[in-house]
Length: 198
Length: 372
Image 1 (cartoon, one colour):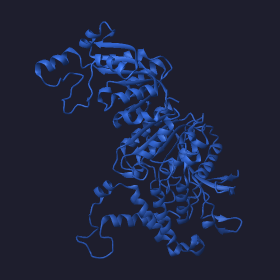
Image 2 (cartoon, chains in turn blue, cyan):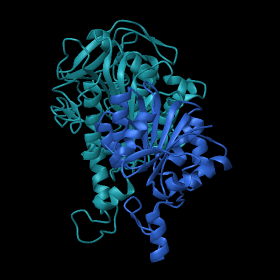
Image 3 (tube, each protein chain N blue to C red):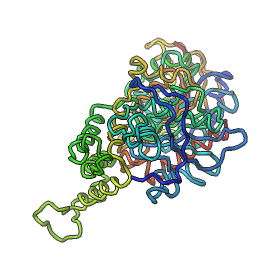
Image 4 (cartoon, each protein chain N blue to C red):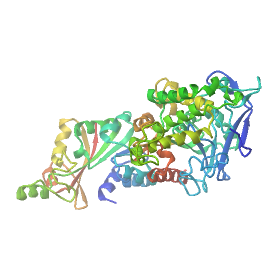
């Protein structure tokens, strides 16, 4: 399993209710069920992926996070997980607010656009960066709102949510992000993982 | 139509108060079963049929001698695997395959009911069928499954009997009929009523059958079961056994000939008054209204696991209407999965060979059964 998923599983307490937004083939949901005895639900936009989830016995609805989070009442989940898709939404502010309305807490992971390879790519080549985690060209990428770890921390102050835990993933190593190391984590981490609250 | 002797019938002695206010008792409910009930009696699936279906879900229908209406989905190793599950299906009351319906004789007058038969509802249908559980001594069904009007019965069943099923699978259905749905049904009813042979519903006593009206009703309805794209691909403007237009009103086009055929075979197996009664039941169905405008309340008492399936090209019960049920269930934190299956086969997709649908249904049932 991806290190990212292991970190998310660790962040989630046992026997809670979790909504995985963009649950893909249900890998994370499966391990949440197995390891943490979680009541897991998923939303997934791809029909094929939904069918894979169904074949694994997972409760998943086909839908779009921007349209379909509306149907869930306030605080209906203990955690809402959004893995590496915040940057693909038209309005990330509304999405974060919706996640924190539906869930008591949210776990958001973001591919870090501040990573040195991304920076170097743009500096040297002078073209939009293409990396392993961001493989698309500028004209066909679904990622319309890329941000850095630093941007996300700043965003929390602008739209007013609390970051409870922030972790950086660098070469499969996990480390904490603090105010004092933010500059370095923003340069070296591939992924930022944030546990947030209203 | 002759009801053959190989129809299993349960006579329901318990009085059933219908929504119209009348009470019926000692009435027949015709049913069929497939597979076998296990020792724990926890492998039963109650399948509900659609408007023109009957209890003969799969295999050869002993009355029509044709394949059962859900042969693609039900049978050994199929989506609803009869090696594993005990499948029960009853003919709805108001129907014409042995269950209490308008072609039966009224014991009080000794005349065929015709339109004197009480108007029945989807609620009445499921309240009649729940008696099958007592008959088989089943405390809780593993699943209730049905498409179209069968899906409406699924929703009504779990609302009326929240503890009587573990899983709930409404397919290509709605929680209430739209104006468009009612309009199409009314078209069918008027086609029947305007056939001179219908004789205000007394045709069985007169020995005349409103075949023309019933067949037009079926032709119109059949169009609503298919998609524009599906029809275009299958028929386009192809001509029927001719090279050029004949400048007349015979069936020049293949689609005309196809619809006429569909209409003509339908009248051999279906009763016109049943068609009136069952379409009326569908039009009256409004689970939202039953719960004072809040569909969620219909499902508040159940802990069952729901799985809702719609089809991309179904314009009779479109995805959004299926999704409204999903939304109502999510609003109360119910366990609900949902998928829209890609298919060009229109509303009829659930009855046809649509591999993604058949696979998904099987996966849901088998996985839920192994985890129960």
